[in-house]
Length: 197
Image (tube, rainbow, N blue to C red; front, side, top):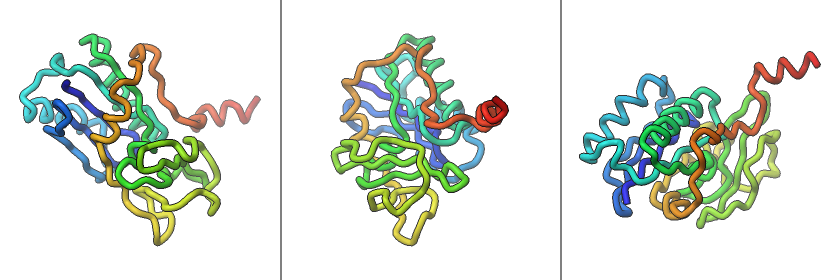
């Protein structure tokens, strides 16, 4: 089986191709700059290195949030377009689960103004604390896993692509037209709109 995984929800961009349980290409880079201009060249490089064409992919796994609104939209747009145009099954993933995949613990993404997106997972990727948009507090289970520094004990995510794929490869695929971003909160524009109600 040939799988494509796309994660553009955080400052860490991940594109991976997995063939029969082996990673044949992975781009995993936390430089946090301009995902939209990098995405297509990285995908082209991925397919070239794996000696595949997009239509050779059997399943697409895409992170649909929570995280950066713009980042999520970039990855989802690419994945949904491929899934629809090439009739490839598509499966959504949690950014927090992906972040926690190599460590186990509470994945945190800074949501600004004292809030975080938080989700806690055990070593088998079982959800201990459901993905939520919450005020940052010491009550969140440790260790903290994040690309942001929340305290001196915060550890960087070590993404285990194969563990994530293994857990989700038999999930039901979703209709690409119905796959929406999982923002867990309103966008700033929506917040402003509701504040005037």
